Length: 442
Ligand code: DOR
Figure 1 (spheres, helix red, strand yellow):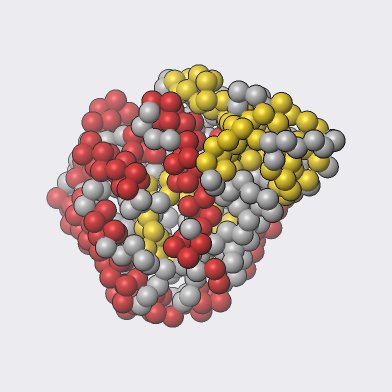
Figure 2: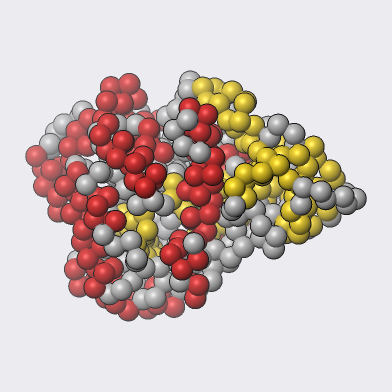
């Protein structure tokens, strides 16, 4: 099957240009403005931009075990709608994905039910070092250095030293210091004010844990990715280790801050917590300066009923995967960043951080994971039209300009004008860890 996409502004690694892209089966086979070929389908994409599909390297899709919140079918529809063609999912499902068998179970589930491409991290525990050393078909190891949703936690120094010393897969971590959080929880015991969430999971909690993880990575020369950076203070620490360490920021830490509790309450309760407007600004600047390379969502759905319980019974986390690209395209329209930067942060950089083979770029030989976006389209986010099973968004009633309109996964069109083709599944992403990460393949 050959598909020719003509007349789009195509975001290539060398810049954005009007050209034609030919897809044959699952691959991009030609890019040429003067292309004259007969294809099975020819798409006139005049007025639209063609981007590589987004790779979201931090999502929580809840299957198995928590499927009343989300499952791979609903989450991957949300991805297709949002222009996300590959997701890397976290291990705090039930059971926690901490062995090869449990990883393989998730891969088998996704092979049947995910509309988009997928990968699953293996979760670290204090006792599964053999599993971590031998894990295959995974982007890497996830450590909860501070606890969040679920009971995955490794905060004993000996266990952390062993993981960094004895394993070879790239490691990423949730960095909030458990001792600091517990001490703050005791201080605010009895509080039902969700704004106290940011005082309990405070700046110090994030900075102490990130510093500790960076020290481990440096001493053991281990590739390390800091998940969801939330404070300005972590940025210089990360920048000091740019040869070994990459970092990620989430849309909620760019767009929300502690003032939003008054408006949105527990809907914007998440871990790491919201910080200040100064932190928002510093995180944007760190993206611009290249100190943070990746934007990912930490999509963490809970039902509205669960979220509406009074703090601190309300769970942490929010859904974002179907709106993340639009949120950033809107910033392009506002002049805050360029389309090429968005493609770097959301497509190319995550592919390189996790050694994903043939994804993240529009280039000959790369996978035909593509998204057509309409930079002029304005639409308002509504709870009712969300594909995520939890059916709400913290960006409800927000109007954005710039939306995905058509998404291909491996050359197969999965989303077009509000409709999904669920007749084919995505594929397991391939990881070539011998490539050596972001800085070796940039
Ligand atoms: O707020 C969060 N929710 N942060 C996490 O790290 C986990 C997530 C979840 O799984 O609910």
